[in-house]
Length: 160
Image 1 (tube, rainbow, N blue to C red):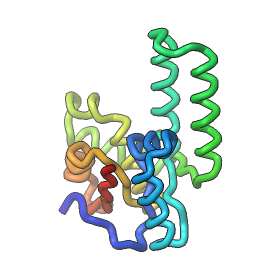
Image 2: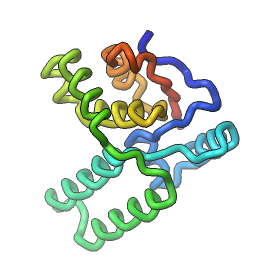
Image 3: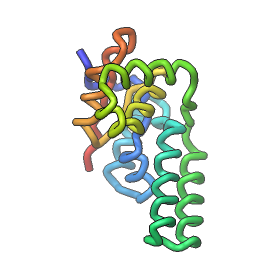
Image 4: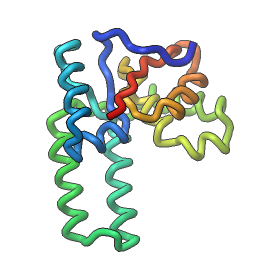
């Protein structure tokens, strides 16, 4: 079955693309979040892996000297400030088990390219959440390789 459009009451976790749009103030993302709040009574969650991926991006930009130390500090602070207002889904032992099964199913080559997304999906599934994303192709590939007890993945495509 793989991925399905979630029913409006399913809690969602934002993947990194959606969270990045939120931190950049993209109006369409704010609208999607408000709609999710209206449907579920809660804001979407953020996985700890999503925050990790955003922070790694900042460190990589700093190391390549594409941003200054001051900019990196400002970006880090903004990410952590926004994240503090949302529920954070921690990567736990159940998520680790899901990741292991998906990675073996996908094979080493695909797993190496998708490991952040795999960890985000596994964290969301371990917490009984779907995923809000702009990256339908990657998420559907991961969903096609979920362990049977976690199939299907509730997947909301939030394109701007």
